Length: 552
Image 1 (spheres, rainbow, N blue to C red):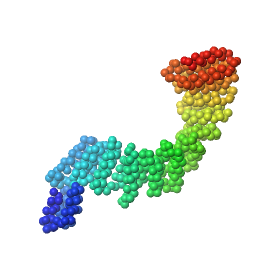
Image 2 (spheres, one colour):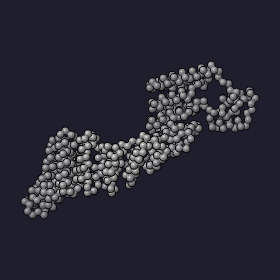
Image 3 (cartoon, rainbow, N blue to C red):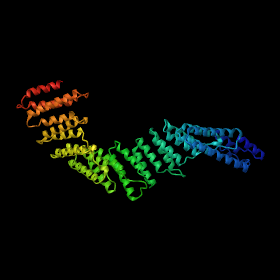
Image 4 (cartoon, rainbow, N blue to C red):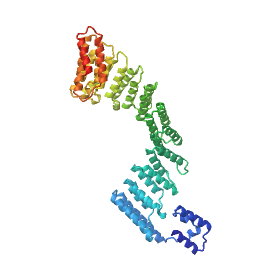
């Protein structure tokens, strides 16, 4: 209809419809895009089109503004029913304009208001229906704002298949030759980066490269961070590291998020060199921060703790890993970052897993440092039962003669703090069992007495209602092993037999199945100790009793 009207005006003014005009019009019809038909006609034809009078123009502008205000009022109410009324009014105005040439001509601004309403109500499918309606109207083609609203709506909805919908809309936008802007690119890249489909991480990277060649705008830190996050999620950590280096070359206005994203990924990866790569990133952060070019980049204990944790998790596999973790602890203090509970816990854990000879001394020093800091007002360095248990475990693994005494001193300190009302210092069965084990492995003359005392303390706590203090098979195994080394073999064997019977009663009265292999191992130890001791009273009867227990 529009073409026919323009051709009539050309004929009226004596203009010729030449071959070039014909070719351009055919191309427009073939592309089914008559929204830009004016540009395809000779300049003279468009110049002779009738223009509205000033009065008509004013009436139209006033009507469009009034209609815009009405739509905004309905949508801003937040009520779904009001939003539906706004959509009905919009559709009615479109129908009237097309049927009788109503002075009120709905435009992209009017549609965008309703689109935004559906987006905020998390109904992207409703918004996309309106978008499709616009695409079918040559005079109401969606602009970049409309496309951006729809894409953002799908991203925020996180509904099934939203990434595919975003990709589809992006393809339609490009087919309409609508130029994307920074906001739209950012939304699409964010959607691709959050996808569980690994292919979209590479597509996000491709879009970023496309932005880098754009003359109108360049990707910012947020866009680079989204791509880095997507690459990490897809498992492409090395590509994420490369992208991070590129970001550093592009801008100095950095924050810590992209660095932390890669460091966190390295923390859960299986790369043999993860600790070295994570610490290298930490060094880069420190250098940027020290040079004053960090912008929003701030160093904090969380980042340091993560890198320390990576070294700590490899302390039993990588030589010198524990010293790297300890060094980072001291480095963060030099940079003015106070270590907290997690920092000390990670370093103590690293020493506990290491096989270093000085591990018992170092974990004890770190524990004392935590106690001192807490006493001086650093509330986030308060040690708890977990820290104490790690230190005790380290002492247990040591062969030092004084380790059992130091470990028991720490256990008594825990008991005192717990009795004083500190519930975080409640010792568990693991602490007692570890201490029993260290005494059992020692050559001390007082080992048996100490073990008996520990077993009584566990039983007392259990009788007071602490079910976690019930001695288990591991506890009894350590006690029996220590008794087999006693000088008084006869009383030791009888005591061991009593413990086995006690253990048997516990299992008979509970729903838990016994660890038969470990039970038999204990009985075998007892049997051997009796077999080679000829001077033990009733040795034969004890041996028979053990055999009966094994049969049972």
